[in-house]
Structures are given as structure tokens and as C-alpha cells.
Image 1 (tube, rainbow, N blue to C red):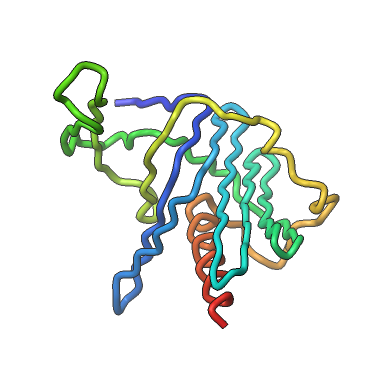
Image 2 (image 1 turned 120 degrees about the vertical axis):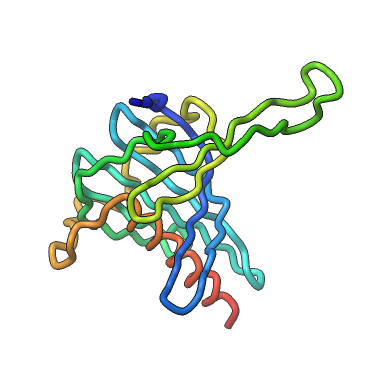
Length: 182
């Protein structure tokens, strides 16, 4: 069964990381914008801890084989290599219907929406995505910001793939939040 994803979407994701000794769920309700045509994705995280605000983003440009780690709080940007294995956001081909639920109320017409929940295999344990809507509010957000001019990608590191970038971003956010505790 071939499943196609909409060309542009916005939603949220969470990352699950499993180690040999324990299960660690790094939960971030991060907004993600996704462009299937241009093979681009942008993930944002903003937060506050102990009165200190932080704002981070990761911009993935698969056709250019690069991604940018942007920390607006520190006004810094790193450009890194990205493999060109673009992962379309879609229901996995081996997906099975887990069930249906009504979000809102079913007691009156127009008070709720019926949603399907699917499960299936994604590479590298995948990630959870939710709250998808079709379309992007601002297609200009896929242009690297001016703090990232003409940077060269770090050529000493192996290129990252989509899932590794998500996991690294979640860890960077967790590290940034924990640094605010001191």
C-alpha cells in the first residue's frame, strides 16, 4: 500500500530515546513545519527556566544536504552535513489502525472531530508526531537566517539523517534547559 503525504504540513513531535539501562522519554511539544515539495523541515523550541528565556531551531534542507542549528538566545548558528535521505511524513506502509477517538464532544454536531490512530514501523524507532494541519503559515521560514551567512558545514562529522537530527535537537534543548538550573 503506497501512502502519500500532503505537500506542506505543520504539527508537533516528541522524541523517545531508549538506552541499554532505562527508558527515557524526552517530551517536547515542539512545532514542526514540513515541506514535502522542497524537502525541507523546521523545528522550533522556545522555553524559560529560572527566569531565563531560550529559543532554538533546527532547519533541515535535504536537497542542499545541510542543516542549521540555530540558537537565537545565544545568537549562534552551526551548519552541519545532512544525508539526502528525505523522510516523507506519512502513515507507514505497514500501518495498522489502532483505533478511533473523538476529540472534543460527540454530543452535538460540530463539537468534535473523529481521528484515526495508526501504528507501524519507522526507521530508527521513529518519532511521534501529532496535531498536523495541511499547509505552512510562512514558507519564508525555510530560508537560513542572516546569522548563518555562508557558513561551511563541519566536514569532520558524518552526515546526520532526519531522525538523528531530531534526537540531537531534543538533547540540545534538554541540555540548554538544564544549564538554566544553575
